[in-house]
Length: 222
Ligand code: ADP
Ligand code: AMP
Image 1 (cartoon, rainbow, N blue to C red):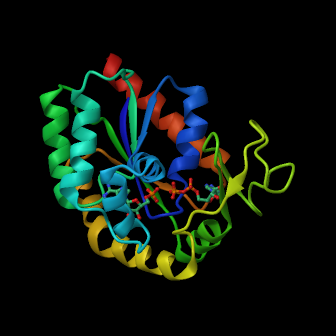
Image 2: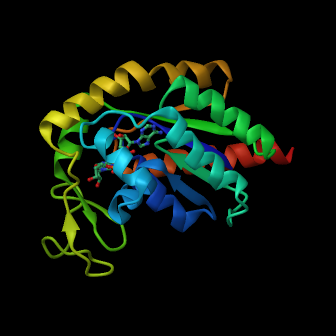
């Protein structure tokens, strides 16, 4: 299963990816995670990306696309199934992704559009917490840890992302509407778009996707 997860910030892409890693043998690639890692390490790319990320703007296409191209062409270990989360985010990135995947002979099977409404997204983003150590996602109301501020699994410290504040969230929503929404149409035209109601709880969203995966596998085997 070769998949892209589409949807606005807070739709639950990262959460779904973390859930699916347990039930599917799949490589998860999140450009947001890669860029945050680069920022933490203070690399040149990280310093450049920070200027955009802190303001809620998109990092320039060339930089992010290069990351993805390297990931697919460097010979780094990758399972036959993969899931892209947070990429593509512009029409140009979608076009470049098709080119990269054609080069490595791994065309996409499904673009999963996680559709959600604004009040839900704002509630999710403002309450999001992330484990500093293992990256596991929490929410202060929807998915609280057993002990406040501490990861259930590795006891790492939970933190709030710098871009999960009200002003930056507003910018990220505007950027999403203007730059990312058009790619929904791009995948609809390719007839690989599947839409799910991402306002539903995570278990329900996961169930819908698992059904899709099974149907897709059946289709491929016949
Ligand atoms: P994205 O990767 O799309 O930006 P996340 O997966 O990080 O979104 O989710 C944002 C926040 O919403 C997290 O705090 C997560 O715990 C919570 N969340 C994710 N999916 C759901 C859901 N289906 N129902 C309730 N809360 C959710
Ligand atoms: P995310 O973790 O997906 O919410 O991404 C956090 C931030 O990283 C975004 O607001 C962007 O600034 C940047 N980013 C992540 N993926 C991309 C991408 N594909 N294109 C441009 N910027 C990106």
